[in-house]
Length: 261
Ligand code: GLY
Figure 1 (cartoon, rainbow, N blue to C red):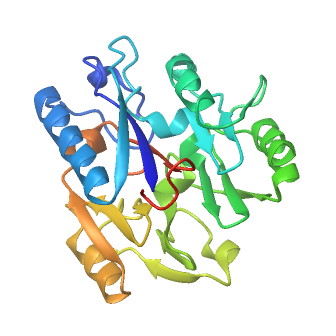
Figure 2: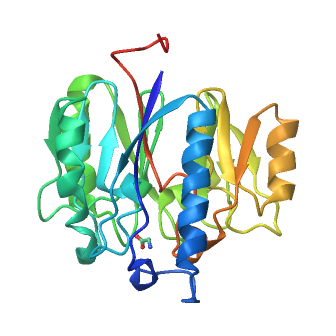
């Protein structure tokens, strides 16, 4: 029912972009093992994984979420805000073109997929250091014919909108209120991260459950109490590269096999 596009960890991961976390040594071999576990978690949640080979000259390329947005009707190649990341999309585009009609964000627009959260027909876009007004406006224009409404959202103190808020069920968001004004999400059921788990708002929803980092047990408990099925993965080395669970895949509905047949 789901396809997940992933990319193997780059040998140059330690040279990744960092904005809000300090640079510390990354165990590359452990990062690769953790990424392989993450892929198994995607499979366990019903995804058919299409794994792209590593791009060793592009440190952040494992964070494939940032280079494209995929809706049932269309895929949009983004234009990442960090110049060092602009080459990452070239090998993703042909794969997506076999699955969806394609559109693209053009200069001077910038947009990172990590800034884009879809809830039904509502699309929330973080106006961040990576995603600018021009990129958001282009996305609004591209998605309007398909009935999506784009809302710009201000974030502060975090890399992407999905560092601060993610969808964990149809009407439910997991939020870090220190990084985004939750009044913008009035009408949704909100689950706040535990205050001791600053980075815990990034959960990857697939169907009726989520993939969530192992290191946030208190927030996991809150998700469980809300009736959300949680698969945990240890992504400590990817977190050191300012990544987490949504960043490492592009999850899309498998329109050729909508019922998993
Ligand atoms: N290291 C993830 C990013 O900055 O894009």
